[in-house]
Length: 170
Image (cartoon, rainbow, N blue to C red):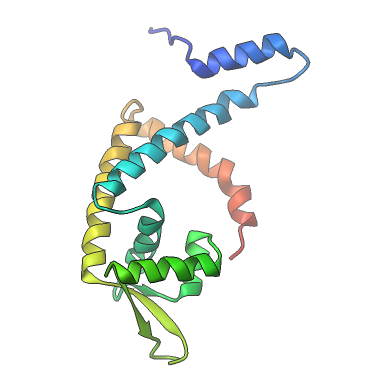
């Protein structure tokens, strides 16, 4: 049986427990590790997206359109809901993606006063390639855990996030 050596979070928790014995610092054992993992994930995502000339926000918008399925279009309001940014921010993001030729604006056939944002063929190629690299990078981040433990962790994290997802505006 292998014995796990302490990590940086163990050292931080032990130091706080010593310095503040009046506080239960046990939440740090989970959430400090989640925070540290989030930093590694952010770096992996920046690298995967950067290799394809994308910023994280660009990938978020393009991937929302790609996940919508053919013809890969959504209204700006739907994009706002999926990416959790303000409508003003989304307007700016759409304009920048149009300039790069990754999306195009189209009049809605249902209401010509409404606009649809549609993924271009170039945008689809870029988001598909970036996603493939991202999945490879994320698989490497998880390789220390066997698939069954990954599934268990996914279930635990889903339970932890449920109250936040339930409170999110729709």
